[in-house]
Image 1 (cartoon, rainbow, N blue to C red):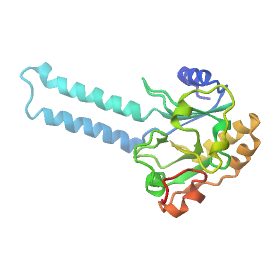
Image 2: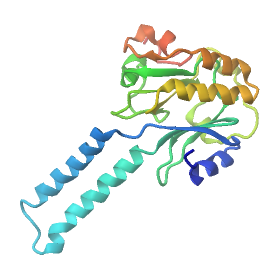
Image 3: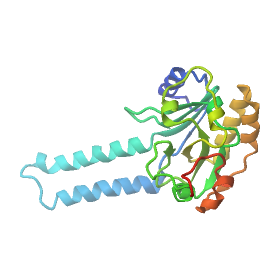
Length: 234
């Protein structure tokens, strides 16, 4: 079993989510890594057309571009879904960033579903803004987990007590995270942890949710992305 990084355990402790049950990531694949390397080589090559007056000045832009692309890659590759005993951590664990903490009582029953394909159609299908901090997918994402729950501010609060959910009965704030492994593995882990924590309705609904590929058609949203609130008229 792969050791769990200390920063994951610290985040779970800070949010009072208990022990960590599973970790899922959405790291870039080989083609994306090659694209980053290609971009670095191209930018470095362009600087050699008019090199600096000294060897140091000639090499300096190449080194600068290397660290620039490395930082961008690290930030984008740090996305994780960490399933804990009393909730989930969702978001980036890259340096200087912190994930969101969502307790199981904040998640709307029936909203946790595995997306098996076409996850990048999410914004087209829902009409939600392209840059929404609770939607954690990149251009390489293919599959992941959708759910409805608290706002970003509520998830940042690292709440330690019970949270009333009556105001979310008709729909909830959208959350989406990409996964490299089949998304149903992540939802199964959530179902098991929620069941062990006493949230039997959430566990049952999550365990029975079949994987679905997004169609990109707005009228399919209630079935494919249940309980997620979308802009009026979309």
